[in-house]
Structure formats: structure tokens, C-alpha cells
Length: 209
Image (cartoon, rainbow, N blue to C red; front, side, top):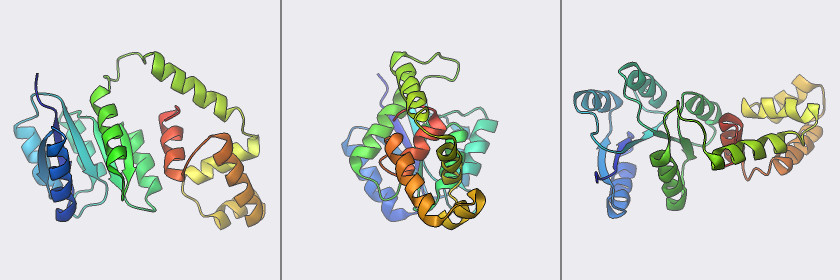
């Protein structure tokens, strides 16, 4: 059985060092790159022969993580990707999920969150494969939660996903900021979202996570 390989692409040397140590101790083969262009060249020259996953930072100098994702797909390299994002990068996270990322983690994240994301990445099925029972149930549960929202709450949900400020949402919806805050709390409760990051994952994925 081939060892699972994780390719880390992040310009933060300290993060790469600590992540490599943790992942190697967990039994993964780890390859890391500070430069997305170098990662692209290496993956084109020698794609992983066994199970592999890409742990990819969103913001990097030169080529962004989203750009690297596009370039990999252009060359037929469709590795499961877990994006890492900083605080306040929700719109970028949404783009990442829309490109087909398995998951995204908001920095700083706990080892347990990374472990769960990696398990999901290595269990990911090809796009052509029909969803399994668990996936169908997660999708059905999400639709049930969405049905709890009023039309106004659904409208607000769309603005929250776009990372609009409360003041901007208030202007767009013609309501007060306090009413926006109240609606946000109700939306989070009805959708059983622990955080905005969690909410975005469910909205983009179309399922409960």
C-alpha cells in the first residue's frame, strides 16, 4: 500500500516546518514548497504516484493558491486540495470551495481540524461518482435547515456569504444595523453554524459539515 503524501505550499517557513514535523509523525510522507511556481513545476515533472493531497495557502507572493489551483487543473493534475486562509478572507474561501477544494481551514487551526480535513480529502471520490448514503443525508439535512429560514433571512445569508459588513447589509436591505445583527443570530442558530467559516463551508458545499 502506498504511503499517503501531503504536498504543502506555503510561504511561511515556520508553518511549513511545524506542519511537516506533525504530519510526518502522523505517518504521512510530506513534501513542502515555499514557492507555488516551484510546486507547479515539481508536480508537473513528477506527479504523486499514490494517494496525495495538497495543503495550500491562499495568499502567497507571485502566484496565489487559487492561481496554482487553476494551473494544476489546466495540466490535468486534480489533487484533493485543502485551502488555508487567514482571518477576513471569507470571499477567497468561497472561491476556493467553488473551484472544487475539499475543505478550507481558517488560521490558526487545531491539529484535530487538520486531521479531519485530511481524512475527508483522502476519502474524496471523483466528481463523476454518485454521492454515498452519508453524503445524501448531509445534503438532505442542509436543505431541511435552509427551509427554516424566512425569505429575508435567506437574503441576508447571501450577503453574509459575500462577506458584507453589517452596515452595508443594513443599507442593502433597508433595515437597521441592530436588525441585521438579530437576523444574523437567527440565521446562525437555524442553520446550526458554529462560526461564519462553518457557515460558508455548508453554503458552498450544499451539505451539513
